[in-house]
Image (cartoon, rainbow, N blue to C red; front, side, top):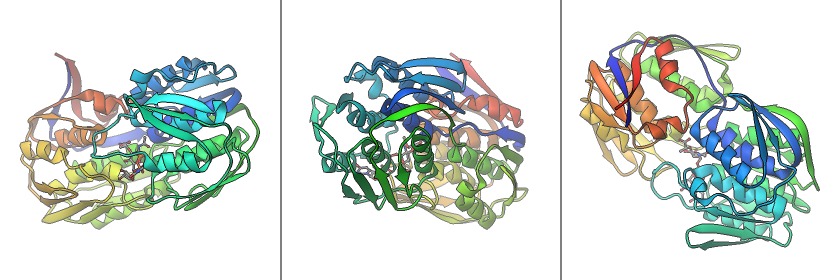
Amino acid sequence: MEKLVITGPTPLKGEIFVSGAKNSAVAILPATLLIDGICTIKNLPNISDVRITCEILEGLGAKINWIDKNTIEVDTRDINNTIAPIDLTRKFRASYYLIGSMLGRKKEIEVGLPGGCNLGARPIDQHIKGFEALGAKVEIISGNVCARAEKLIGNTVYMDMVSVGATINIMLAGVLAEGTTIIDNAAKEPHIVDIANFLNTMGADIRGAGTDTIKINGVTKLKGGQTYSVVPDQIEAGTFMLGAVASRGDLIIKNCVPEHLECITAKILEIGGNVEINGDSIHVWCDTKPNKANVKTLPYPGFPTDLQPQIGVVLSLADGTSIINESIWESRFQYTNELNKMGAKITAQGKSAIFEGVDNLYGASVYSTDLRAGAALIIAGVCATGTTEIYNLHHIDRGYENIEEKFRLLGANIERIIE
Ligand code: EPZ
């Protein structure tokens, strides 16, 4: 069994380079199935979700050539199978993007019901609603999603709630559909724009991504033949920004998109941290105890739920009592039990939690319950006095490339041990 061993406290100092966005890469890879050609994708984060997706694409007939650890060439001219490797598709959430892509390309697909972080109920009713609006038939049979269509015809889909996954999946299904598809009340996250830009580079006709109305004019074929670079990861950049504040450190976060981080910057200024933007770099430093603050997670451009556990660590060390309201996921406070083992004073109830700030955290053996909770525990371990051991690293490796190396570059005393 692997664990991370961290000895603290250490103020994080130095420069860090942000990788490509996980939540963009795991959608762009299935989107290549819409291309009857070859394309090259750069700035891919080398994480397990990406590697598994590549295996799945090969199972459907794609040929993948790794040019280096973050660049691949994908040849999807010969997609000859419409049943995805079921076990692999159950390992993570974004496997549901195979449905939109393969309905568009081959008019049929069978995948396992998607897995991913246990954050409470994660239905896909909005995805199915969208596919059915374009004329597909979707059934859940023995735990698999089976979707097929004679043909896809563009239609207007109004989303009952803002959903990143459903917005992207309907966009994928609309690219090769006859006529125009309109998605109303669409999600606006940076990765939605990145996927639309990728598809447009390959020959699609998508307009309005990043707004709450997206229009997809169907085209007959995507020929590819282009190179695309994945957008820097907003959530990884935010993780290090909050790490700088929690550890009272001083970081320069490079290769990020400051506009994508405006709400995190605003919250850091509110709690007494400092932020300076310089082109595609952000300088974050904090040399005082953070102020208390209240946070409500919301769809973009609101405070991202995927940074909720990380700011939870900051507020557990703040001056006073703070409240976090989690509006997206039913159970995203599991990490607070682990922080309480480290001396935090957090009371979580359903979709909100009260953080009574303490002066110090102390090392302990803790378990990451999901990807972002794992990142938060690393920050807590860096801030804590003594030695922290973190288990269940498979969660963290799904979404962060070389995370312990990056923290080590910033001065953290951290190592991965195989027991
Ligand atoms: C994406 O999940 C991200 N995952 C999540 O990041 C992120 O937390 C989430 O968006 C919100 O930003 C990927 O991009 C792979 P949603 P997704 O559809 O698409 C409800 C991480 O740590 N809903 O926007 O699954 C749903 O239950 C992960 O990187 C329906 O009810 O999220 C939730 O309450 C964790 N029916 C809300 O909408 C549906 O059909 C938002 O979900 C779809 C969603």
